[in-house]
Amino acid sequence: MDLTKLTLLDAKKGLEKKDFSSSELTNECIKNIEKNKDLNAFITETFDLARKRAEVSDEKLAKGVGGKLEGIPLAMKDLFCTDGIKTTAGSKILENFIPPYESTVSSLLDKEGYVLVGKTNMAEFAADGTTKTSYFGPCINSYKSNIDKRDLVPGGSSGGSAVALATNMCLASTGSDTGGSVRQPASLCNLVGIKPTYGRISRYGMVAYASSFDQAGFFTKDIKDCAYLTEIVCGKDDKDSTTVDVEVPNFLTNINSNIKGKKIGVIKEVNDLLDEINPQVKLAYLNCIESFKNGGAQIIEVSIPTICMGSLLYISLSYTELGSNLARYDGVRYGRRTEENVKNLDELYVKSRTEGFGKNIKKRILLGYYLSSSENYEKYFIKSQKIRRKLANEFAEAFKKVDVLFTPTDASVAFPIKPTDEESKILRKFGTIDDYMINPVNMAGLPAISVPFSFSKEGLPIGMHLIAKHFDEQSLFNFGKFIEDNR
Amino acid sequence: MVYFVNYLKILVKMKKFIDNEKLKKLAKLAKIEIRESEIEEYLSLLNNDLGALEALDNINTEGIEPLTNPYDMILREYPDIISDGDKVDELMKCTPKQVYNYFVVPKVIEK
Image (cartoon, helix red, strand yellow):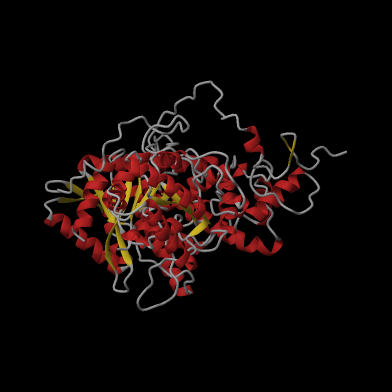
């Protein structure tokens, strides 16, 4: 039996029944990491630490005193600070940063006995949907088209975490989602990927991109694993004043995939664009709607007109927040400092930042500075915040009529890392449509999930996307389980 | 659909919002150096995005208050107690250069 193919919950059962040990399971995951190094899924491997931790877990499991994740190998996106372990956020400017503290997410997982196998590759500062902008080189999707053998993107920004799980290098992995960075790679790599409600999970110790959008999430093999893990990390944290003190339900035991009589919303503005997306994604979407109907749910079309502004709000608001957040990297207190001889402090800042940031980040910082400058602040930033409220209000109206909203996760399947000029044009169009479905969720702080549904004729995964009301992750798991059982 | 088509049209139009001089000013403020050979590329990238952002004007926001976070959450205040973990030595290990727990930087005050 290949232990690494087990779901997290099945592995947990196996460990508790002592069918196998955490050391065996961990070593099998490590073997998969070593076998698939060409995919560049990890920035830092923590094998020695993992093996030691697995031994400790085995002792605990022998005594029957393990935590909820005792001995389970997981991978962490490299923007969760891990005490004493390098944390780079995919950037040269943090290439040697070893944080002296632990993120709340990793510390909660640690408390429950997880085994960290490594820190995964990601787009620089989580600001790109392909994972191509990582200073440590692009991450490559383990899925290949059966007619075109070029390397494909895994999506991003959490591409490394998606690939690590898709190739069984771990039993689940963490991600962060600012504008789709968990859900999109989940869709392109045949995984469940969740972005919980903003405020559900502490952002303490996560390297910031756009603080009013960023949210931690998970990649898992199925819905039950996702419900189990999400529950562990949810809750108020004194170290993050945006976490909300609301009850965390027992997501796993509450899962109910009976959708009879439930109302599923489809979005008019997305439906209007269906002929513009990959026809196979469209077909999958329509098939999934059919299965909802067969399950007894009612399909209701709702209009969210401002959803079309998703990509623009993302640019104007997240770039501004990024510019502000990344002002902290100065080459003085932490992070990389230029090795050139500099004459004064200003030159130290300029050289350190110019050498440390990639082109995509520099572009976003510059634009962020432009948008938030005194002469443009009202025109772009405040205007966008007003549109953000309008969008959030429209979502709230929609949720008066339906239990969940439903869209495809991505307008396309995984695409080549090096697209032709012709393909690039199509990808730009798809990217704009993606922004109708994925980004607006972050603008309104809503929870959403991508669930694997089918494969294209080239053999590439297609995921479906559910959006729920604030703090209603349970509906994501319920409807997600239905999709999982009816694909 | 109308917005989508408008968006694509705007992408094609490419107005120049930021010129060479403005780019240099932004770079100075952001403490980033743009080499002469990179200027055209950055101008194109930035003006492209700004062209698209013109579509923000299509949305009527009269009487709508700005939303600064996803759902008008009220931030909690932290209790007024020191909770920095007392990790001076560990934190100072993160700096590229330090002496006696001070950050060392090049000369700041010119003669």
